[in-house]
Image 1 (cartoon, rainbow, N blue to C red):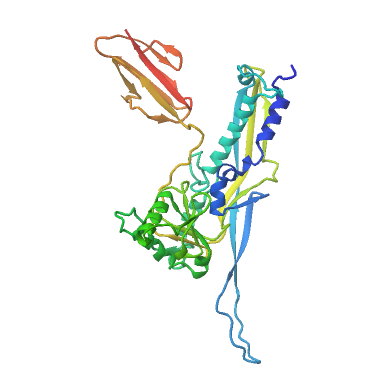
Image 2 (image 1 turned 180 degrees about the vertical axis):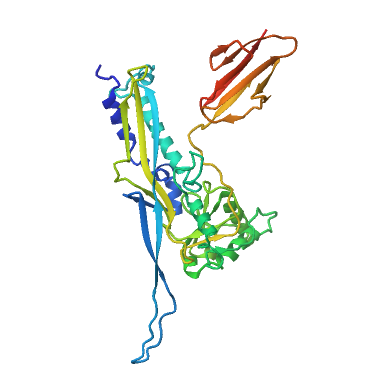
Length: 409
Protein backbone atom coordinates (compact mmCIF):
# COMPACT_ATOMS: atom_id res chain seq x y z
CA UNK A 1 0.00 0.00 0.00
CA UNK A 2 3.05 2.30 0.16
CA UNK A 3 2.52 3.34 -3.43
CA UNK A 4 -1.26 3.69 -3.30
CA UNK A 5 -2.71 6.83 -4.84
CA UNK A 6 -4.25 8.86 -2.07
CA UNK A 7 -5.21 12.42 -1.29
CA UNK A 8 -1.76 13.34 0.02
CA UNK A 9 -0.01 12.14 -3.14
CA UNK A 10 -2.55 13.84 -5.41
CA UNK A 11 -2.16 17.15 -3.60
CA UNK A 12 1.64 16.83 -3.70
CA UNK A 13 1.65 16.23 -7.46
CA UNK A 14 -0.73 19.16 -8.01
CA UNK A 15 1.53 21.50 -6.03
CA UNK A 16 4.63 20.31 -7.90
CA UNK A 17 3.23 21.07 -11.34
CA UNK A 18 1.27 24.21 -10.41
CA UNK A 19 4.32 26.47 -10.07
CA UNK A 20 3.92 29.53 -12.35
CA UNK A 21 0.85 28.09 -14.12
CA UNK A 22 -1.38 30.87 -12.78
CA UNK A 23 0.58 33.33 -14.91
CA UNK A 24 -1.48 32.06 -17.86
CA UNK A 25 0.11 33.64 -20.97
CA UNK A 26 3.36 33.99 -19.03
CA UNK A 27 3.39 30.21 -18.70
CA UNK A 28 2.32 29.05 -22.16
CA UNK A 29 3.43 32.07 -24.25
CA UNK A 30 6.63 32.99 -22.42
CA UNK A 31 8.70 33.46 -25.60
CA UNK A 32 6.06 35.61 -27.30
CA UNK A 33 5.61 37.72 -24.16
CA UNK A 34 9.36 38.31 -24.04
CA UNK A 35 9.38 39.45 -27.68
CA UNK A 36 6.42 41.73 -27.02
CA UNK A 37 8.04 43.16 -23.91
CA UNK A 38 4.96 42.41 -21.80
CA UNK A 39 5.12 43.61 -18.19
CA UNK A 40 4.09 40.75 -15.88
CA UNK A 41 2.74 42.00 -12.55
CA UNK A 42 1.88 39.91 -9.49
CA UNK A 43 0.29 40.68 -6.14
CA UNK A 44 -2.70 42.59 -7.57
CA UNK A 45 -5.74 42.88 -5.28
CA UNK A 46 -8.58 42.71 -7.85
CA UNK A 47 -7.86 46.21 -9.15
CA UNK A 48 -4.62 47.93 -10.11
CA UNK A 49 -4.65 51.70 -10.65
CA UNK A 50 -1.58 53.29 -12.20
CA UNK A 51 -1.19 57.06 -12.27
CA UNK A 52 0.13 58.59 -15.46
CA UNK A 53 1.29 62.19 -15.30
CA UNK A 54 0.42 63.89 -18.58
CA UNK A 55 2.96 66.69 -18.99
CA UNK A 56 2.39 69.95 -20.79
CA UNK A 57 5.18 70.81 -23.21
CA UNK A 58 6.64 74.21 -24.13
CA UNK A 59 6.48 75.77 -20.65
CA UNK A 60 10.07 76.99 -20.44
CA UNK A 61 10.76 80.68 -21.10
CA UNK A 62 13.64 83.10 -20.97
CA UNK A 63 13.62 84.62 -17.53
CA UNK A 64 12.56 88.20 -17.06
CA UNK A 65 13.82 89.22 -13.64
CA UNK A 66 10.96 90.05 -11.32
CA UNK A 67 8.30 88.88 -13.77
CA UNK A 68 8.30 85.06 -14.13
CA UNK A 69 5.38 83.63 -16.10
CA UNK A 70 3.61 80.70 -14.41
CA UNK A 71 2.56 77.58 -16.32
CA UNK A 72 0.45 74.52 -15.50
CA UNK A 73 2.72 71.49 -15.68
CA UNK A 74 0.03 68.94 -16.60
CA UNK A 75 -2.53 66.62 -15.04
CA UNK A 76 -2.86 63.15 -13.53
CA UNK A 77 -4.60 60.41 -15.53
CA UNK A 78 -5.61 57.09 -13.96
CA UNK A 79 -5.15 53.84 -15.86
CA UNK A 80 -7.20 51.09 -14.26
CA UNK A 81 -6.87 47.33 -14.61
CA UNK A 82 -9.64 45.14 -13.22
CA UNK A 83 -8.83 41.54 -12.39
CA UNK A 84 -11.38 38.71 -12.40
CA UNK A 85 -11.58 35.32 -10.71
CA UNK A 86 -11.45 32.22 -12.95
CA UNK A 87 -11.85 28.57 -12.01
CA UNK A 88 -11.50 25.09 -13.52
CA UNK A 89 -12.97 22.10 -11.68
CA UNK A 90 -12.11 18.57 -12.86
CA UNK A 91 -13.51 15.29 -11.56
CA UNK A 92 -11.50 12.07 -11.92
CA UNK A 93 -11.03 8.66 -10.30
CA UNK A 94 -7.73 7.51 -8.80
CA UNK A 95 -8.08 4.07 -10.37
CA UNK A 96 -7.87 5.67 -13.80
CA UNK A 97 -4.16 6.06 -13.06
CA UNK A 98 -3.55 3.00 -10.86
CA UNK A 99 -4.98 0.45 -13.28
CA UNK A 100 -2.40 0.85 -16.05
CA UNK A 101 0.33 -1.34 -17.44
CA UNK A 102 2.86 1.26 -16.37
CA UNK A 103 2.25 1.08 -12.62
CA UNK A 104 4.79 3.09 -10.61
CA UNK A 105 8.33 4.16 -11.42
CA UNK A 106 11.49 3.40 -9.42
CA UNK A 107 10.73 6.23 -7.00
CA UNK A 108 7.20 5.00 -6.29
CA UNK A 109 5.56 7.78 -8.29
CA UNK A 110 2.76 7.44 -10.82
CA UNK A 111 4.02 8.93 -14.14
CA UNK A 112 0.55 9.05 -15.70
CA UNK A 113 -0.86 10.87 -12.70
CA UNK A 114 1.81 13.56 -12.96
CA UNK A 115 1.25 13.83 -16.72
CA UNK A 116 -2.50 14.22 -16.20
CA UNK A 117 -2.07 16.93 -13.57
CA UNK A 118 0.34 18.78 -15.86
CA UNK A 119 -2.19 18.56 -18.70
CA UNK A 120 -4.96 19.87 -16.44
CA UNK A 121 -2.90 22.89 -15.40
CA UNK A 122 -1.59 23.52 -18.91
CA UNK A 123 -5.15 23.59 -20.21
CA UNK A 124 -6.08 26.12 -17.52
CA UNK A 125 -3.14 28.35 -18.52
CA UNK A 126 -4.03 28.02 -22.23
CA UNK A 127 -7.61 29.06 -21.52
CA UNK A 128 -6.35 32.20 -19.75
CA UNK A 129 -3.89 32.92 -22.59
CA UNK A 130 -6.69 32.65 -25.16
CA UNK A 131 -8.22 35.84 -23.71
CA UNK A 132 -5.09 38.00 -23.73
CA UNK A 133 -6.04 39.84 -26.97
CA UNK A 134 -9.79 39.44 -27.49
CA UNK A 135 -11.15 38.38 -24.12
CA UNK A 136 -14.19 40.45 -23.13
CA UNK A 137 -15.49 40.39 -19.57
CA UNK A 138 -18.94 41.38 -20.91
CA UNK A 139 -19.10 38.56 -23.48
CA UNK A 140 -21.71 35.81 -23.24
CA UNK A 141 -19.10 33.26 -24.38
CA UNK A 142 -17.78 31.56 -21.21
CA UNK A 143 -14.48 30.76 -22.96
CA UNK A 144 -13.89 34.45 -23.78
CA UNK A 145 -15.18 36.38 -20.74
CA UNK A 146 -12.47 35.45 -18.22
CA UNK A 147 -11.08 39.00 -18.49
CA UNK A 148 -10.84 41.80 -21.08
CA UNK A 149 -7.85 41.45 -23.39
CA UNK A 150 -5.57 44.08 -24.92
CA UNK A 151 -7.44 44.56 -28.24
CA UNK A 152 -10.77 44.73 -26.43
CA UNK A 153 -9.42 47.56 -24.29
CA UNK A 154 -7.85 49.32 -27.30
CA UNK A 155 -11.11 49.11 -29.29
CA UNK A 156 -13.02 50.54 -26.31
CA UNK A 157 -10.65 53.52 -26.17
CA UNK A 158 -11.02 54.06 -29.92
CA UNK A 159 -14.79 54.04 -29.41
CA UNK A 160 -14.65 56.64 -26.61
CA UNK A 161 -12.19 58.85 -28.49
CA UNK A 162 -9.14 58.60 -26.24
CA UNK A 163 -7.39 56.86 -29.13
CA UNK A 164 -8.03 59.05 -32.18
CA UNK A 165 -6.41 60.87 -35.07
CA UNK A 166 -6.86 64.14 -33.16
CA UNK A 167 -4.95 62.75 -30.19
CA UNK A 168 -2.14 61.50 -32.42
CA UNK A 169 -2.37 57.83 -31.44
CA UNK A 170 -4.59 56.65 -34.33
CA UNK A 171 -2.59 57.10 -37.55
CA UNK A 172 -3.69 56.26 -41.09
CA UNK A 173 -1.44 54.14 -43.30
CA UNK A 174 -1.37 52.60 -46.76
CA UNK A 175 -2.25 48.94 -47.25
CA UNK A 176 0.43 46.33 -46.61
CA UNK A 177 -0.14 43.57 -49.16
CA UNK A 178 1.89 40.65 -50.45
CA UNK A 179 4.46 41.80 -53.07
CA UNK A 180 3.26 40.94 -56.57
CA UNK A 181 6.73 40.88 -58.12
CA UNK A 182 10.41 41.17 -57.26
CA UNK A 183 10.14 44.90 -57.93
CA UNK A 184 7.14 45.48 -55.66
CA UNK A 185 8.32 47.44 -52.59
CA UNK A 186 4.95 48.84 -51.51
CA UNK A 187 4.66 46.81 -48.28
CA UNK A 188 7.94 48.17 -46.93
CA UNK A 189 7.18 51.66 -48.25
CA UNK A 190 3.85 51.65 -46.38
CA UNK A 191 5.63 50.67 -43.14
CA UNK A 192 8.31 53.34 -43.58
CA UNK A 193 5.70 56.01 -44.37
CA UNK A 194 3.72 55.08 -41.24
CA UNK A 195 6.77 55.04 -38.97
CA UNK A 196 7.63 58.56 -40.10
CA UNK A 197 4.18 59.69 -38.88
CA UNK A 198 4.77 58.39 -35.34
CA UNK A 199 5.58 60.72 -32.48
CA UNK A 200 9.34 61.30 -32.60
CA UNK A 201 9.75 60.01 -29.04
CA UNK A 202 7.97 56.76 -29.89
CA UNK A 203 9.92 56.36 -33.11
CA UNK A 204 13.23 56.49 -31.21
CA UNK A 205 12.58 53.15 -29.51
CA UNK A 206 9.48 51.08 -30.18
CA UNK A 207 8.14 47.66 -31.03
CA UNK A 208 5.70 47.36 -33.92
CA UNK A 209 3.24 44.48 -33.57
CA UNK A 210 1.75 43.01 -36.73
CA UNK A 211 0.31 39.69 -37.85
CA UNK A 212 2.53 36.97 -39.32
CA UNK A 213 1.52 37.77 -42.90
CA UNK A 214 2.39 41.46 -42.62
CA UNK A 215 5.73 40.46 -41.07
CA UNK A 216 6.51 38.33 -44.13
CA UNK A 217 5.23 40.90 -46.65
CA UNK A 218 7.37 43.69 -45.17
CA UNK A 219 10.52 41.53 -45.15
CA UNK A 220 9.96 40.45 -48.78
CA UNK A 221 9.29 44.02 -49.91
CA UNK A 222 12.42 45.20 -48.07
CA UNK A 223 14.44 42.58 -49.97
CA UNK A 224 12.92 43.84 -53.23
CA UNK A 225 13.80 47.44 -52.41
CA UNK A 226 17.41 46.81 -51.36
CA UNK A 227 18.05 43.74 -53.57
CA UNK A 228 18.25 41.36 -50.66
CA UNK A 229 17.36 41.46 -46.98
CA UNK A 230 20.85 40.61 -45.72
CA UNK A 231 20.76 43.82 -43.67
CA UNK A 232 17.73 42.61 -41.69
CA UNK A 233 18.76 41.52 -38.20
CA UNK A 234 16.59 38.66 -36.97
CA UNK A 235 16.47 38.34 -33.19
CA UNK A 236 15.69 35.21 -31.20
CA UNK A 237 12.20 34.14 -32.18
CA UNK A 238 10.54 35.84 -35.15
CA UNK A 239 11.26 39.55 -34.59
CA UNK A 240 13.62 41.62 -36.73
CA UNK A 241 15.10 45.10 -37.05
CA UNK A 242 15.88 47.16 -40.15
CA UNK A 243 18.88 49.55 -40.20
CA UNK A 244 17.00 52.19 -42.18
CA UNK A 245 14.45 52.40 -39.31
CA UNK A 246 16.75 52.62 -36.32
CA UNK A 247 15.04 52.07 -33.00
CA UNK A 248 12.15 50.11 -34.55
CA UNK A 249 11.69 46.37 -33.94
CA UNK A 250 9.15 44.46 -36.06
CA UNK A 251 7.33 41.88 -33.90
CA UNK A 252 5.08 39.56 -35.96
CA UNK A 253 2.51 37.76 -33.77
CA UNK A 254 0.29 34.79 -34.48
CA UNK A 255 -1.99 35.33 -31.48
CA UNK A 256 -2.98 38.86 -32.56
CA UNK A 257 -5.12 37.49 -35.41
CA UNK A 258 -4.93 38.30 -39.12
CA UNK A 259 -5.28 41.76 -40.61
CA UNK A 260 -3.73 44.88 -42.08
CA UNK A 261 -3.09 46.74 -38.83
CA UNK A 262 0.03 47.88 -36.97
CA UNK A 263 0.53 48.72 -33.30
CA UNK A 264 3.58 50.68 -32.15
CA UNK A 265 4.39 50.71 -28.45
CA UNK A 266 7.19 51.15 -25.97
CA UNK A 267 8.64 48.25 -24.00
CA UNK A 268 6.51 46.94 -21.09
CA UNK A 269 3.48 48.99 -22.11
CA UNK A 270 1.27 45.91 -22.45
CA UNK A 271 0.60 44.49 -19.01
CA UNK A 272 -0.71 41.18 -17.66
CA UNK A 273 -1.41 41.05 -13.94
CA UNK A 274 -2.08 38.14 -11.58
CA UNK A 275 -3.34 38.37 -8.01
CA UNK A 276 -0.90 35.96 -6.37
CA UNK A 277 -1.47 37.28 -2.85
CA UNK A 278 -5.19 36.62 -2.62
CA UNK A 279 -6.30 33.48 -0.80
CA UNK A 280 -8.79 32.83 -3.61
CA UNK A 281 -5.88 31.89 -5.90
CA UNK A 282 -5.03 28.25 -5.25
CA UNK A 283 -4.96 24.70 -6.51
CA UNK A 284 -6.47 21.96 -4.40
CA UNK A 285 -7.49 18.31 -4.62
CA UNK A 286 -10.32 16.93 -2.51
CA UNK A 287 -12.01 13.59 -2.01
CA UNK A 288 -15.53 13.83 -3.39
CA UNK A 289 -17.10 10.38 -3.66
CA UNK A 290 -20.36 10.11 -5.57
CA UNK A 291 -20.75 6.56 -6.84
CA UNK A 292 -17.14 5.63 -6.10
CA UNK A 293 -15.08 6.34 -2.97
CA UNK A 294 -12.04 6.81 -5.21
CA UNK A 295 -13.54 9.90 -6.82
CA UNK A 296 -11.58 13.13 -6.48
CA UNK A 297 -12.03 16.71 -7.64
CA UNK A 298 -9.13 18.97 -8.60
CA UNK A 299 -9.84 22.70 -8.59
CA UNK A 300 -7.58 25.52 -9.75
CA UNK A 301 -8.48 29.19 -9.65
CA UNK A 302 -6.73 32.52 -10.03
CA UNK A 303 -7.38 36.23 -10.47
CA UNK A 304 -5.98 38.02 -13.52
CA UNK A 305 -6.42 40.92 -15.93
CA UNK A 306 -4.74 42.79 -18.80
CA UNK A 307 -4.28 46.42 -19.77
CA UNK A 308 -2.37 48.87 -21.96
CA UNK A 309 -0.59 51.12 -19.47
CA UNK A 310 -0.06 54.27 -21.57
CA UNK A 311 -1.87 55.30 -24.77
CA UNK A 312 -0.30 58.75 -25.18
CA UNK A 313 1.37 59.26 -28.59
CA UNK A 314 4.91 59.06 -27.20
CA UNK A 315 4.14 55.53 -25.89
CA UNK A 316 1.47 54.06 -28.19
CA UNK A 317 -0.07 54.33 -31.66
CA UNK A 318 -2.31 52.11 -33.76
CA UNK A 319 -2.82 52.29 -37.49
CA UNK A 320 -5.89 52.20 -39.67
CA UNK A 321 -6.95 48.69 -40.68
CA UNK A 322 -8.13 45.91 -38.41
CA UNK A 323 -7.43 42.40 -37.17
CA UNK A 324 -9.72 39.43 -37.66
CA UNK A 325 -10.02 37.76 -34.30
CA UNK A 326 -8.61 34.23 -34.49
CA UNK A 327 -9.21 31.90 -31.58
CA UNK A 328 -6.11 30.68 -29.80
CA UNK A 329 -5.77 26.92 -29.55
CA UNK A 330 -7.27 25.66 -26.31
CA UNK A 331 -6.37 22.07 -25.47
CA UNK A 332 -6.94 19.43 -28.13
CA UNK A 333 -10.69 19.98 -28.50
CA UNK A 334 -13.38 22.23 -27.06
CA UNK A 335 -16.61 20.99 -28.68
CA UNK A 336 -18.01 17.65 -29.78
CA UNK A 337 -17.49 16.65 -33.40
CA UNK A 338 -20.17 14.28 -34.64
CA UNK A 339 -18.84 11.55 -36.93
CA UNK A 340 -21.49 9.43 -38.68
CA UNK A 341 -20.70 6.22 -40.56
CA UNK A 342 -23.59 5.21 -42.80
CA UNK A 343 -23.58 2.77 -45.69
CA UNK A 344 -26.88 1.97 -47.43
CA UNK A 345 -28.55 4.61 -45.25
CA UNK A 346 -29.17 8.35 -45.06
CA UNK A 347 -28.92 10.28 -41.79
CA UNK A 348 -30.62 13.40 -40.56
CA UNK A 349 -29.37 15.45 -37.61
CA UNK A 350 -32.08 17.57 -35.97
CA UNK A 351 -34.13 17.24 -39.15
CA UNK A 352 -31.33 18.31 -41.52
CA UNK A 353 -29.03 16.18 -43.66
CA UNK A 354 -25.87 15.20 -41.79
CA UNK A 355 -22.80 17.28 -42.66
CA UNK A 356 -19.34 15.96 -41.77
CA UNK A 357 -17.26 18.16 -39.48
CA UNK A 358 -20.19 19.76 -37.65
CA UNK A 359 -19.36 20.53 -34.02
CA UNK A 360 -21.62 20.95 -31.00
CA UNK A 361 -21.04 22.42 -27.55
CA UNK A 362 -20.72 19.92 -24.72
CA UNK A 363 -24.15 18.99 -23.32
CA UNK A 364 -26.04 19.77 -26.56
CA UNK A 365 -28.87 17.31 -27.28
CA UNK A 366 -28.90 16.08 -30.87
CA UNK A 367 -31.54 13.89 -32.57
CA UNK A 368 -30.26 11.39 -35.13
CA UNK A 369 -32.58 9.66 -37.59
CA UNK A 370 -31.46 6.90 -39.96
CA UNK A 371 -33.30 5.75 -43.07
CA UNK A 372 -32.12 2.56 -44.80
CA UNK A 373 -31.64 2.66 -48.59
CA UNK A 374 -30.85 0.19 -51.39
CA UNK A 375 -33.42 -2.32 -50.25
CA UNK A 376 -31.83 -2.68 -46.81
CA UNK A 377 -33.57 -2.61 -43.45
CA UNK A 378 -32.48 -0.54 -40.45
CA UNK A 379 -31.26 -2.74 -37.57
CA UNK A 380 -29.56 -0.52 -34.99
CA UNK A 381 -27.36 2.44 -34.11
CA UNK A 382 -23.95 1.89 -32.55
CA UNK A 383 -22.99 5.14 -30.77
CA UNK A 384 -19.76 5.31 -28.75
CA UNK A 385 -20.00 1.59 -28.03
CA UNK A 386 -23.70 1.59 -27.06
CA UNK A 387 -26.46 -0.01 -29.15
CA UNK A 388 -29.83 1.63 -29.90
CA UNK A 389 -32.48 -0.29 -31.81
CA UNK A 390 -34.71 2.67 -32.78
CA UNK A 391 -34.06 4.54 -36.04
CA UNK A 392 -34.48 7.87 -34.24
CA UNK A 393 -32.34 8.46 -31.16
CA UNK A 394 -31.33 11.43 -29.02
CA UNK A 395 -27.67 11.81 -28.10
CA UNK A 396 -26.05 14.20 -25.60
CA UNK A 397 -22.76 15.57 -26.96
CA UNK A 398 -19.88 14.72 -24.62
CA UNK A 399 -17.35 17.42 -25.50
CA UNK A 400 -15.07 15.12 -27.55
CA UNK A 401 -15.76 12.94 -30.60
CA UNK A 402 -19.09 11.14 -30.88
CA UNK A 403 -19.00 8.30 -33.42
CA UNK A 404 -22.34 7.00 -34.62
CA UNK A 405 -22.62 4.01 -37.00
CA UNK A 406 -25.79 2.87 -38.76
CA UNK A 407 -26.22 -0.92 -38.92
CA UNK A 408 -28.49 -2.28 -41.66
CA UNK A 409 -29.39 -5.79 -42.84
